[in-house]
Structure formats: C-alpha cells, structure tokens
Image 1 (tube, rainbow over the protein chains, first blue to last red):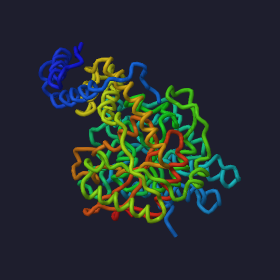
Image 2 (cartoon, rainbow over the protein chains, first blue to last red):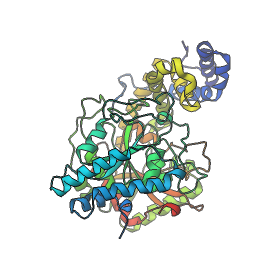
Image 3 (tube, chains in turn red, blue):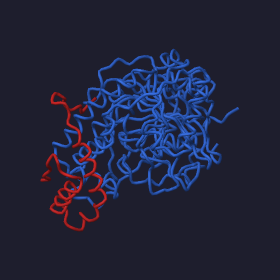
Image 4 (cartoon, rainbow over the protein chains, first blue to last red):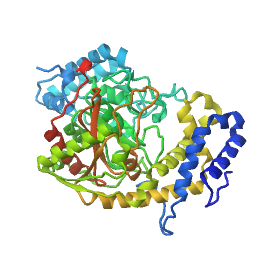
Amino acid sequence: MVNMKPNDSVEDIARELRAQAVRLWGEQRASELETSLQQTALQLWELGQVTPHRDLEPGFYQ
Amino acid sequence: MPQPYELTISQAAQQINDKKLSPVDLAQSLLDRIDATDKDLKAWVTIDREEVMTNAKEREEEARDGKPRGLLHGVPVGLKDIFYTAGMKTAAGSKVYADFVPDFDATSVTKIKEAGGIILGKAVTTEFATSDPSPTYNPWNFEHTPGGSSSGSSVAVATKTVGAALGSQTGGSTCRPAAYNGIVGLKATYGRISRCGVVPVSWSLDHVGILVRTVEDAALMLQVLSGEDPNDPGSANQPVPNFIKQMEVHDRPPRIGIVSQYYEEKSTQEVWAHTQDIVQKLAAAGAEIVELSLPESFKTAHSGQRIVMNVECASFHEQFHATQAEDYGPRVRSGMEMGMLIPATKYLQAQRLRRQFRHDMVGMVQQVDAVMTPATPAPAPKDRNTTGDASFQVPWTTSGLPTVALPSGLSQDGMPLAVQLGGLPFEEGKLLGVAKWCESVLGVQLSPPNYS
C-alpha cells in the first residue's frame, strides 16, 4: 500500500509510488513507468496543496 | 443539386419527410462515399452493408406510407466503436475486446433507432477511448493527428461519409477532435445522455458526445438522445425541453464571457490572436463581451480529473489487466496502472475538490450566456504519435458543464481552428442558441479540400 503523508514532496510521493509499482509488477515495469509515476506524483502533490472544506462531500455523479 | 452524402442530417431528415429524398439513395450514397475514401482515411472499423440497406428500405416504405418513426427517420448515424450494438462487434479499439459482441444496444443506439435513424456502422476509436493514437488519418493533412479519442467519428463526419456520429468525452475526446477536423462537437451536461451500454473509461467523467457539421444538427441529435435512464446511475432526472425551439429563442446577440487567465498563456500566439479576432467580430455583430476570472479551484481541475480517470479506469480494467496486461497499448496500460497505485483517500479528495470546482464554475458561467475560449491550445499537432492536447476541454468535462466546439477558421498551415463555448448545466438549448448565432455571424463552414 502506498503510504503518503500530508507534507510529502513530489519526490517523496514519486518514491512511494515507485516502491509500490516494484512490489506489484517488478523493477523492470516500474522503470518503464517512470514518466507516468512522476506525473502522478505531481498530480497527487497538487491535490495535497488544497484542503477541502470539512463539510464538502465527494461529487461522483454530478 | 448536392449529392445525398453532402446533406446535413437536418436537411436529409427534412427531405425524407418531404418525400424528396429516398433513405435508400442516402444510405447507398454514404456507403459509396465510404468505399471511395476509407481505404486512405481509416475512419470506419465495422459496417454491415446488408443490414444498412435492409433498414433503409424499411424506412423508405414507412416514409412512403406516411409513417415516419421520428426526428431521424431514414437518416444514417455512425457510432464510435465503444457503443454496444446487439449482435455487432464492439471492440473498443482493443485486443482485449476484440471478440466482444454485445447482446443489447446502448440506450443511445436504441434512441437513434426509435427516432427512425439507421446505424451506418462503427467508427474507429483509440484503444478504450484513451490516448494511444488510432490508425485514422486527419483529412486536412495526413501528417497531423486527427485527435482522439473519437477520431473515426470526427473524420467520418468531416469527410461526409456520415452526417452525424456519436463519440464520447472523458477528458477532451469529442470537442478536441471536432476542432482538429473542422466540425461541430457537442458535449452535453453530465447525465443528460445515458452512458448505459457505452464501454467506460471512467464512470463519473464519461459523457456521450455528438459530432456533426452544423449547430442545428447538434440540437437535433441532442433532442433524440436526451432523457433520464434508470440503467445509468449517473443519468439526470431532468426534463427534456425542446432544444431546437430553445436554440431558436437564444439565436440572438449574446453576453459572452472570455477568459484570458490560463488560456492566453497556454495557447499558441496564432490561436490566441485568432480567438481575439473572433471575439472582435462577434462584438461588432452585437455580442456583449465580458472578461471573467477563473475560480480558485481551477488550479486542481486538471490533476483531479486525471486522478479520478485513472482510478476508475483501473477499477474497470483490473480483471483484464491481471491476465492480459500485455494486450493493452502503452498509454492506456500505464494510465490504469497509475490508478492502481493511487490511495483511496486521494481519489476521494479529488472527487471532493471536483464538486467544489463544479459549484465554482457554475458561479462563473452564471454571469454570462456562454463562456468562449479557444477549443484547443494549437491546431492538430503534426505528430501522429499523439492525440493532441485536451487541457481546454478538461475543466468542462470534470465539472460536467456542456460545451460546443465550433469551427472558426484555418491556421497558416491550413489546419482547422475552433472556439469552444461553455454553458450552464442543463441549459444546452441556450448554449446551442449562442453557438448558432456565432456560427451565422462567423459564416465558417470548413471542408477538407481533398474530401469536399
């Protein structure tokens, strides 16, 4: 399971994602996914910069 | 006298209704056109000619007997190859679904048939409607991408092998290829058109898209396709108005919002200058132009969309991935694998922020009749290894608000340019009215020179 903390940097998140990718699919596949892992880490970091209002529920279907 | 294949669907429907056009002649004209063009363009994947002609003959007899079924009586429509068609292969552009033959029609397919429409065939999609490029060629220039993921549907409409085709949009897959091929694209409000029987990318983001050559045709298709569907959990319990009538009511000088923030920086100089020119022309014709500011929540709209899409895509494909991972294209596979890595808390965070964003977008759009931006940051890239840039569609897709892509001119190297209009949820009639007014003021009808 990917372990992320609120103050993690993009690099921290990418490291966590990569470690999980290695566990699931092995070192070679994780290396092939390097660019996607970096992009996903950045996306997760961007989301982590915003704290939703405590009463805000998910939308799912609009 | 135009050839039958040249008619818009509104013209064809009217002429069939007036008994001036035979559904058989129309269907044959389109099939001949496909035969003449598709060896090069690769827009179509499955066509059952015998079934098409059988249906055309039935519609002809019904028309002759004065018993039209509905708004599309005798008019052929194309389907992106992710729409379930009972008894006809729905391969979703993938080895994983290569032999999948559904045993029921998608709700939208049923609605087309009930309206008297004829399913002409299945158009090429990128694999599972994501971003691995399809084999389809852009008719404006074979070296440029046709866009995606509704590449076949867009090219088929642009080259007049069909007057209307269904696509889908999870990021930018309807309005972007519409823009790249010089046609009109409509993504209605999330929930307006049923997704039942459409191979999903991401349940909470997927929209059925409409690809046509005029705004009037977009309204006609929307009228046929709209409505609540108990088989789609995202379907909206909203009344279906008369969109064509509403469009006509709103076909007048509108109040248009423009957004420089983000869009100017992201666009090429040529695209931004072109859009400014379009805005000036509309203002000169009577539109009121208002500069708007993006909401604060815009800054996570793109990241959030990607997180939601990848996680939901991973959930749908998990069982296939376990045994057939090697059968997927590289981009769809890596996308779902990213989704498998994302913690549930982050997915839910993205959905919470998305709800806020939708609320904020409604607040922004409420100030005007429609918001206008460039449809894409640049014309179709000269690169067949990409489907292009969906970043101008994503905010509208993730917020579920309706948009229209409208052809607006040509770039210096002869590729189509387009603007995108966005409106309020479930106010497509008004949005189409604004689009129709813009269409008539601009007077731009694009047709690829080698396929006119």
